[in-house]
Length: 291
Length: 203
Image (cartoon, each protein chain N blue to C red):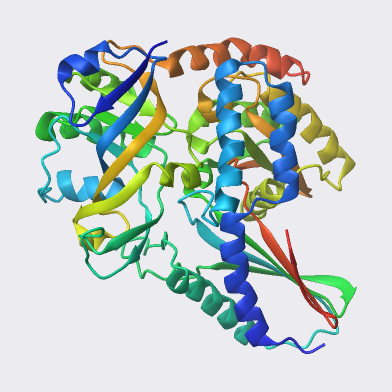
């Protein structure tokens, strides 16, 4: 399968705009679940407003949140796919820029030192593009995540030591959820990375936070940990917007990687309630757009 | 809990009547302000052209569309999506906003810190919590963009909005030192040990 780069560019544009306007079904279901179990009246009214906002955004074809985020494109390339890697990255970048200027969208991206905004949502190494490979034949996938800053600022890494054990990991997650309170726009998905190197650990946390609700960590130990942590953080009473209630997090998601005998790293990356995500798959049959 | 409707600008007396837990609907005018706006106003010596005395500012950087100037869009900007950002980053600007510009209300999400609490008490101000991430809804409360200052900072300009029934907003920090965030923080601290114990961790 030869990848059509014009279609890649168009899809990169489309996914950015779609992600900003329509929440994935798993997140909508997550809201219904929280609304059904929430006991605090203020929290219940906040959840109702959030649910109403999802409808207003779709009815008015407007953005769910004003924060257009840092654009992230996660690429998965299957077997037998012919593509010029450099041209692929250029096509994604162009699509991202066109979404910003043609919709138009707020460009939320600035130079880190001069703070100059190019008004394109692009800059040095942004959009963030990650590339991985799959064993599926004639398959190409593009996942787009506009990562809002309120929740991205809730990112932390601790190089725990082995003597701190899993207790150190659990304590770190609970304490960080308490520390960020309402700043990260709860109810959230708390992404937790466990193991790896420092950079891999933060990458795992990001991957965990972006995973669909209802998905389970492939590592059984990670799956056990995310179940325990999900229950624990929702005991804290932080609630939607940090104004109290049972619904602090939709879930805690954990991703793991092997680590060094002397290391015990843990990272937290939070996804806000506007957990936006869009996905396209390219196969010989054509392009399919979803979540 | 009382519901208030306030036409902007407002007086110190109106502000001191508000108690944490009350709700407020704002009418007429609102100003959009952000990190860069305030860095330029207070660190880089630029003076805002608007009279913000008795007014409300909202922590925002909107999505806008450039259009030809008209009676409806005198600044040449049409609103696309206007929402609210996390307030905590702008904590150190609450005091100068009140002291130098006479601002009486700060609207944002996630709450502000101790210096803001003190400034609200001293000068007569409140923090109104909006529900973050509900910008599509919030945009329907904004009639139009009537003026803009510090335009080179786009999207972090100082924006003037004509508003219509903006809210309900929750008085989360009042002018008497009251804050809804205090109770939540205390609850979380009280429950921390229990949450850790549920995972077999002693604290």
